[in-house]
Image 1 (tube, rainbow, N blue to C red):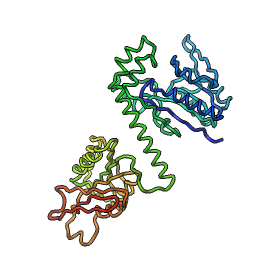
Image 2: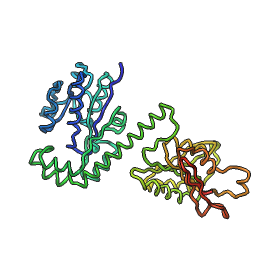
Image 3: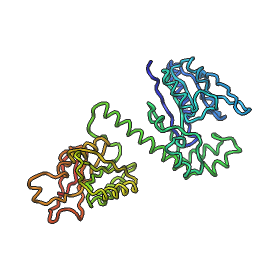
Image 4: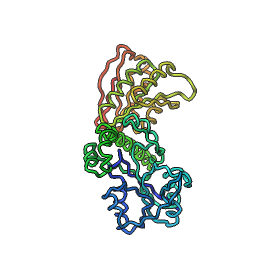
Length: 380
């Protein structure tokens, strides 16, 4: 039996319209003849959301007693027995009442997918496990219900439901999210404009990373070697020499020029274990990369230049930053340096920037080399 597909509507905060959009997608599919049911939808008394659910079949909920109170949960077995083509299941991060087969709703959804049922669900950015602490720092509210990031990342489709902070506050003030007695408190605390702006940015950045992952999988699956430049990704090649700090800071500045830019650093270790750089300097440079918000990787390879190039293509780098050679002119007469090999091997799809520094060989003539396509800035 083929596994079902998961589509997730991701929002920055309650009230942006995730459930409404999920129901709208269910209505569209139902009109096309798809067998769609509501497995669980929470409308919180919002008239427009409730209206959007009209006409869709709803699988009755299961009532669960807990601590002298009754709670209603999705009846997982009933949905599995009904076997629709598509099930609408709200609130991916929800924690089920004790006594249910699964602790979390995302685990219920996993069973539906294994049963060959497509699922459409919703989640807010503050419920992603990796962002739990960050959201608490922004809003002052700790989210008790979380979902592992990988559960959402592995969805077949993720759609960001976006709304500006100002528009969401207007929706709140008009009574379209919470009942009247909760509006003033919400606008003064969780729904402050600064909070909403930060949460919105988090959601956009997380979704952008998911796009990068999807592109990498597509390139690997189709044997595509050349990078696709969805955003600036700068790779700094570190030899373990004293020029590393200069290269790292230059790479960070380049990556920061564009929105969503990212920078990484790589050091290639020879397969024979021969140390080519100073361990102390590399530890210092790793710390500097991480302090500036980048990531540091070590790869093993017999050929340093090829190791840098292979890693650059693996991470979809748009630029490689290398240091001007510290080799003497006499040595260059007999062999090519790592920098020259990287430039020649980068092709037209990756730009190479050679950065001069105080450790470069003395007395060298520096000039700029350009290519008609995929221009490379090279100091030789």
